[in-house]
Image (tube, rainbow, N blue to C red):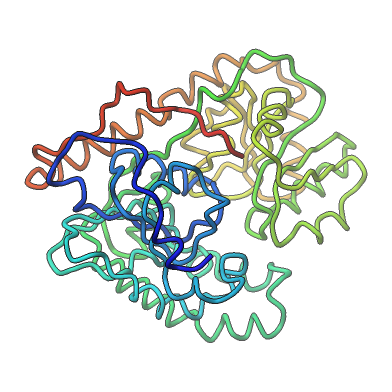
Length: 408
């Protein structure tokens, strides 16, 4: 898909009342190659700004939602390279050169970016406010730099040498880009602390949207545990595989990623890998699993929230975003050492407890509905930027905006 083809997208299908502000806002997101948590945040922002163009490094239109495709999508020069949307992570050495080439249009008066990488460094005209919804300072450059280097099975020796060489300049680019952001919004208190520590910037917390109403919490539970994740080193799927090897309990893993082949080779027969699955399969498993397994450190963690929306308790490593979304002893339990022994002990403790209430799990995440997220973003922008948003004609929230996600 060429850049020109992506730019020539149809006008937004969602209409809003005429306003002089409607076409003066630009959106940005690191890359558009699927529909995960970050893209769901962007999708909700796109409902607030239905005429805004979206600036991104690379895009695969067939892998994103119709809502996002309805926007004019502007990509960087990396889009011209064959296979870039499939192998975008390998182009990290070029991000700091490609991103400044993304220049928002001269008529832009406000920029809202959704970022877990370096897209916050796109070119914004002087004096134009830029609010960055930060999913995380890029983990592979900061806290999890060593984990990424030593744990990723697809880097290879030359890839590791190259990454070590470019990481310092990429970190510097990220720091400079962060210094130019007007305001930060963090997706969790865990990320707020990281934004302060890494960038030296304050931020407010607005939790990301969860499609709570897509799930039925009343279905009968079956005798299997569930893990849904991108299969990358820092997610610690290996920990779950080894813990479930010990007790012979059935674990179903849904997801794809660089570690899938390696994990499959090592897994016992009671650990089943389904790969990436459509939403109906994910929904079925979330609504019927005995419990959801969450072994890694996440900045927020959409999947355990979806599990609770489906009535499933969560067994989680008690660090990071899970501490903000799981109530220990009410909607799940924590283990506090990231070891096989600690996870096995947590499983045994979970099975000795009375059944967790699906209704309590559901209640715990109901405040994360997409409409609540849009309302929080709107209130924040009106409070922080009254000169710009006073009189802004927001889309009509009663016009039947769909809450469902419809994708895994």
